[in-house]
Structures are given as C-alpha cells and as structure tokens.
Length: 305
Image 1: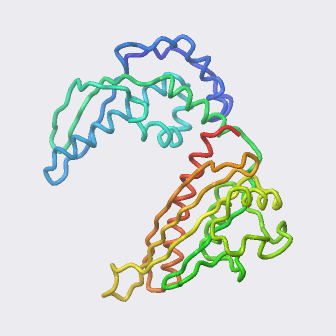
Image 2: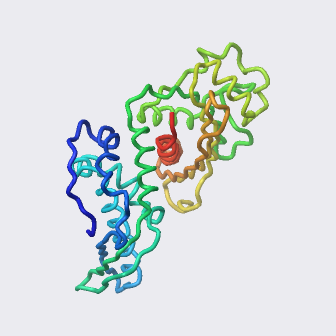
Image 3: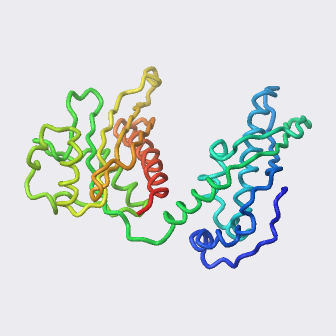
C-alpha cells in the first residue's frame, strides 16, 4: 500500500474502543496521499468465462483497496478481531467509498484472473461511517420493540393480525419475535400494555397511520414499532413433486415512537420447501424474517441513538 502505517494504538476492547480512538491514530494522515490505495484482486475462471472472472477479480481488488484505507485508520489488532463486521460494512460496499481507480496490472495465470488497481478512496466518508459504527457498537440498553405483523396465508382472502376485530397472532409475527430476540431486542407483549382489544380505531386498519402507531407504542412502553405484512403463496416449482414449496414476501417499516418517524423500510423474501406444508411455510417465513431483520439492524446501527 502507498500509505504510512507507522501508528499503533493499544486496543481497549474489540471494535468499540478502537473506533473511539481511531481519530487519534489518523491525525497525521489528514492529508490524503494523492497516489491512493493499492488493491490486489483475483478470481477463479470457471467454464472458460474469463469476463465474469475479470469482474469478480475487479470487485475483489476494490474491496482490498477499501480495506487498506480502513486499516490506515484502525489498529491492526482491531482489523483482525473485527474483520467480519468491517467486511460487511465497508469491504463489501467498496463502490460507496471508491471515487475513482485505474488498473495497474491484469493477467490470467492458469485458472485464475489477477488484477491490481490504484484507487482514490473517500477517506472522509469512511471516517464518518466509522464514527457512526462506533456509536452503534457502544453498549446500550436493548431496544424495546412492539411487533405488528399482518399475514395473508396461501389462498386466504384476508390478513390475520392481533389488532384486528378477530385477534390472532400469525406465524410471521412469532418467527419475527424469535429473530428479534436473537438480535438482542426486547419484544413486548401488547396484551400487557394495550387496555382493550382491538385497540380503538385499529380494527379495520391493516397498516395504521404514524401517529396511531406511536401512541400505541408509547402505551406499551416501546422504543420502536415494527409494522409490516407478509404474503404467502404456493410456489409452482414443485407442482409435479411430492414436496410442498411456499414463497414469503415480507415488507415492514421500523418506526421511532419518540421521534414519530419511520427509521427503516425493509423487505425480505424466502422460499421454503418441505414434504410437510406447515414446515415449508414456516421455513419460507423464517428466511424472509432473517433477511428483513438484517436490513433493519444494519441501518439502526448507523443511526445515532
């Protein structure tokens, strides 16, 4: 790499402490080095598809260039201990941070495509996002979440949901509750906070307005309300087999009760295949829930709290 990496800072904890002190580490690097960062990428050539391998190698090189830029701001110990998080938030999103690049070398060696680039990286943006990530990684009280998930089962004409005139907690909300617990959220039981069922004015509203959601969330003691819907449909891919397949489309919004605004809009998709129809549906919902919640958590981590 073309940068000076002579700075060392003791690691107090894993990512959080290092991010708090990384600004001190980079004080001497405020002036960007004009020649940029070097990224070396490679990819396996399969089925003689050289062009696809070239594109994959180029993406790998861009990620490596961003990795070099991040490593200029963090201690090497933190780069190792926090690599999965840094990879997810920076290296896999290299297009966000690379302003421009030029190819210094590219070639094929046996079944591998190799490429070396020189990239100009938006270091100020990386610093800003590292700051946001530090805030998201700091220890804090878990979010208290009220779930409001409506589900339309295969062949059903209406959605089922707990705030309707005929209250029912659908499988989608149960799966989402499990996934939220895994992520450290505290999921609230609406029956302990809502005084009447269905809540006044909610029975005929599949997706209540923002003010109504916030009033209900405050009544339950929630920080966030995740309101959404799932649509389950039978898939045609197994019509001629003994297996059942269902697809789940899951859309939701995460609302801040305190700020009265939508923080995150997300969507997830899942396909479940099983000899048992119930398990196939459950698998589809579970996959869509995981995908959707990952998006929510990623965006919440980047927001000040």
